[in-house]
Image 1 (cartoon, rainbow, N blue to C red):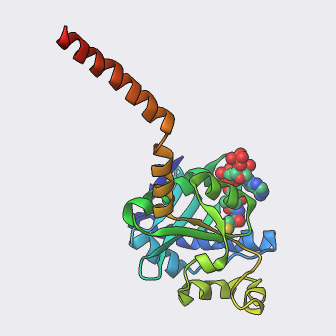
Image 2 (cartoon, rainbow, N blue to C red):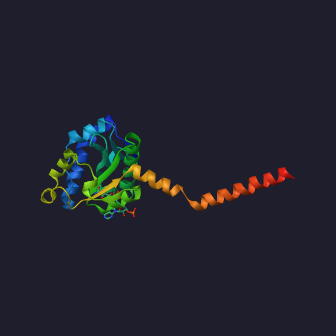
Image 3 (spheres, protein in one colour):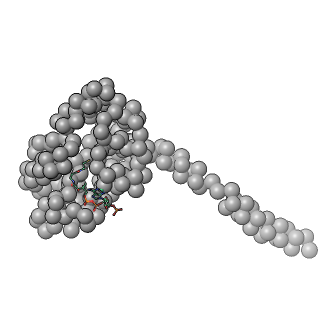
Length: 209
Ligand SMILES: CC(C)(COP(=O)(O)OP(=O)(O)OC[C@H]1O[C@@H](n2cnc3c(N)ncnc32)[C@H](O)[C@@H]1OP(=O)(O)O)[C@@H](O)C(=O)NCCC(=O)NCCS
């Protein structure tokens, strides 16, 4: 299985990707926003998509969107072809697209909205945390994407504040702060101090002799 940043040679898969998303949405009977082959093609052309292929056979896809003038990034449109599900492929695709997003947009907050347990689990493992919609982008073009979801009336009824999807967010600044906090371990510093004292004080004593 190859998991690649999609390029122009993958444009012919755009229709299959859309058909697979549509078919899955129908079967799940729940909300998945519709995508057009033109939209998928643009994502591929801009180097903002990840595709999984088994030989020449389409296996999975996900793409990056930027919102709020690049302050937010979403990894959307995750799809694994039914023939390749349950083998950890979505996890690998999401890892690849996450890594690509962090490299290409290092300062952006990465978020997603989903009703899917599998996606929640994958996001959580990547370091995303569940948040209210108020923490996500207020870019209207993002929320307009929900118009093709069958639950859009629920979002509208709640004035865009909540819906069936759970919002999940990876905030690089918060993560860095937490990492810094984690880095400060008093036990490590006490031990280091004691090692230094033993070494240097011993040296001092030896010099005095
Ligand atoms: C959701 C989807 C992408 C999962 O693909 P996949 O390759 O089977 O997922 P993985 O094998 O990587 O599984 C990831 C984790 O989620 C769990 N999982 C997979 N499908 C699940 C499901 N339907 N319900 C609950 N958990 C599920 C797996 O057990 C795994 O957990 P583990 O790491 O503890 O073993 C795939 O089923 C799909 O394309 N569905 C239709 C489109 C869709 O729902 N997209 C998401 C839109 S937000």
